Every structure is written in C-alpha cells, then in structure tokens.
Image (tube, rainbow, N blue to C red; front, top):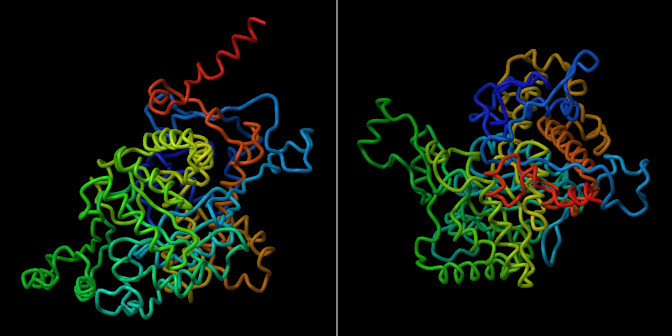
Length: 551
C-alpha cells in the first residue's frame, strides 16, 4: 500500500485505516480530521508541499514496487520539449509554466459538454448523506464547472413525490420535490456552458417514469443516464431506514425491503427492539435477457426511446463486471452514439454496499480500465468513433487523475470521484454549523465547537478556506451569504487537485489535457506492466536511451 495511517511530510493523519484511494475505509461525516482530502478542503494547494518549509527536508516513501494498483503506476517527466501550449504562447520558459497548463475537457457527440477540469462526481442518489449535503455537492460542482450526477431512486424514496398508478409511464410522476430541488440547486449556479447535471435511471426509476418527468420539465438542461451497475456492489442500490412506517412506505412503492416490514413477526420484533432497522434494495436489471444479442436489442431500444423524449445527451454507467460486460458497454455505447460511458472499478462506494461484497466482487479498477483501453483501441482501429469515457473507482488525488486519463488515452475525458469530493461537503457543513448554530440542524452539522484541526487555520470562513475569496470574486459579496461552506470547501479541494494536476502535466511537458498519452506513464513493478501494458520503469524509452549511448 502506498498510504500509511499518517504522513509526517504533509502533516496528515487518517482516522481509520487508509485504502487504495488514501481515504479511510469508513469515511465519517462527523470526522474532525485530518486525512489529505479533508485538510485539502480548507488549505487547498498549500497541501501539495511538505510542511514547515525552511526547517525540514523531505523524502518520498512511495512503495510502487509492491502490488498492482493505480499507485503502482508512475508518471514520466521529461527534460525538454513543450506540447499543447495555447495559441499565443510560445515554448519560451516564461510561457512554459505550470499555471499555463490547460485543464479544460469536453465529451459528447452531437451536443458537446465542456468541463473546466477533468472531474465529475459519482452518482449521489437516495442515500441520506447525498440528500443532507446535496447543496454543498451541487453548488460546489456547479461553481467548478464539472458534471454532478444525481443517482438512482431519488424520486422513489421521496415521501412527498406523487407517482400515479398504471402501466403507462408517461405522466406518472405528478411531482418530485427532492429531484427538482437537486436539479434546480445545480442549475442556479451552473458555470455558463461548463458542467452538466446528470440524472440516472435504474429499474424502479424507469417504472416510475423519471425520464419522462425530467424530459418534460427540464429538457436538454439534463443528461439522462442508463445504469448497468457500479463498482461497490453487484446488486441494486441500498439504503437503511430506522422507521417501520417508512419501511412500509418503501415497500408500497415497490422496493425490496429486508426484513419485510409487512410480516407480523417482523413487526413484533421491531416493537420489542430485536429488529432496529430495515434495508431497502433496488432490483437487478437485465434478468429477462438471456444473450448478448438480447442485451444489445434492449439497450438500443432504451436509448432510442430516451432520444424520442427529446434528450440530446444520453450516457451509460457500468460497474466492475467481467470482460464480456465491459466489451458490451463499450461496443453498444459506441454503436448507439452515446455521449459518455462511466466505467466504475471495484472497491469504491458512496452508499450502503454490503461490506464483504464490496471487498470480494468484481474487477479492480486498474485491471478493468486497462482492458477498457484495449477494447476501445480495437474499435478505433476499425474506424469506429469510440464513446468518450470516464474512469471511476478509488480516486482521490491529483496523480490519480493524471494516471487514469493517461491509462485510457485518448478515450478517457474525465475522472469520476465519489467519496473524495463528498468530504468537503461534510467538513464545510460542520464548520458552518458551529459558526452559525442556527443553521446546524438544517446543514446536518455534527460539531458543537471547532476542533483544533480547524482552529489552527482560523475561526471564520474567510480565514479557514483558502478559496473563499476566489468564490466571492466569482459570485459577488452579496451572494456569498447564500453559499454553503461545504460548497466553498468543495471549490478549495478542486483548486488543490487542479494545481497538482497542472504541476504533474507541466513536468510531463503536456500543456493541454488532450496531449496526455499512455507513454507518459511507466509501471513501478513487472506485474503491473504485465497487467496494464504500461512498460516497466527500466524498459520505458530504453531503446531511445541505447541509441543515445551508441551515437
């Protein structure tokens, strides 16, 4: 593992055990710090450097020679050249500085979606975490100019949504307050032509007519997304509820609820305290399909139907299934002219995924993404206009973004982060709830007072968040009172990731994102080289080196 529990160089500590992404395996909304992502949400790009400058020296302790993961990939640096400079810039050293590295990207076919940085959120659906901190996630993402994804089941679990009966889907949803709140919250602060709000569909959402509702109310302000799965689990989404009345409501909405709250023995067990909560599950998709040909036919039909509703942008999210499903997702999305395919590797999770399932099922991200590039390259060699891709599954840091974009180049346009970019929402809400106690309950703030891990940086929002005045410049002083601190923290983390990515790209002499190539990586061990096709550090450019020696 690359990450130990504490990092003396940058002064960070994980509360729990760090996983491949650098985040704790269990990330708590009430955490008082201070992992790298948590601290970056306050101090931003300052955390790119070792602490106590002038009093210390610092050396790397990376163990890329162990295991196969994204952390076993290393980034190439070069001693000459400059590629992808913006028009008007020259290869003069005064122009070839890392702040001039361009991070803009875009994806899509007929209707391009532009992003200020190559980042998007994971799908934030019916989990209560997503609902409680939505304003921070959505406004932060909107201000940064990146896509934000509304996950599955938001309408179905909303007690206030009005869903009609009958087999005919069109017009079934009369109102969906929570879904509308989420979409409207993003659109209010959308950064002009940058970013997008993506609405995801699962089996229950399709039955409830979510696509029809979104098409009628929002049209092409939204991207609609079909969902095949995710990397955290091999079944549908789950939430946990502690009210038997709410569990019965969810059962009446057509969900699988475990244990069944309608059974007398379960009701008695709940009354006596033996049963304290209920798990709500979504259904598996594709159970009525028996062959690749049937999957293709069903998929193409679904895409055609969504376009008939007026959607100009359609995307697909797939999980860490095996190679057959991966190939189907790339081939079918390409043939259908989809705008984006998000490929989520095993290990991540933003909801209530069964723990041992999350540990044991599916294809790890680096293996899945390596094969995705291989399959996409085969299609491209045949002349296909391969679908634009986003890679997901255990990403949190700027080097992860570079590595994922490079590993999937030229097909990967974005990196999808789930848990990492939820952390600033928690942190900002906790800080705001202390500074403004009257807002604490509404914000789901968890603190009574600011911990030392925060007060060492300041006691007001202006002191604590290094990006506060960047956001104020964008919105104006008067509007800042409407911006949750979680959104400011989101922008602060995004600034750190952006600056770190610019530095890595400048070192690789790539001044625009589309210049990043697989050759900008090498593998830290032979096993990683074999699994990814990325040469070992001792082999990369070795032929060119021998030519120099023999010249």
